[in-house]
Picture 1 (cartoon, one colour):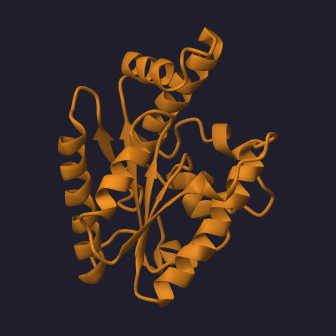
Picture 2 (cartoon, one colour):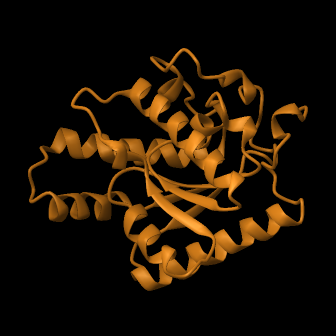
Length: 212
């Protein structure tokens, strides 16, 4: 199965994923951007690259391995990716952090090189992720407008937040130690894998054929 850690910059995704890799057997860890980010990276680039990673996850799936992928693609993008229905399971975790803490982390990580307008964009993207995780009808235009033509947005465009398949786990790292957050993440991953094996995972293979 494919387990996504998504969210805006400096929420802690990469740090948590690296720590998780030492704890959970049968899981491979990758970052969305490790194949290279072009200077003109945009929504279509993110869409196409996510599709590439889904193909990679399918190869791991054939070997009996699960993939944890960190990146910024939210649930709606994953489900709309052309090859997503071929995955035997999908689960998404939004790694979130409070606005001011995100600003502090960005300043610390990047030596204060971002102007206020850019920091605001990171914070705004994080807030959008939070709204999208709660409700598929929250500003879908943010990811649909200007997207790759191959994306199948109609797979979930009629869903409401009551649909059990619209399920993003929220992991808020604000004011918490890395160890505490990794514990929570490990618990979530193990729970999703157990649900998958028992046939209880909401986004098991065949989810696309279920009527909303």
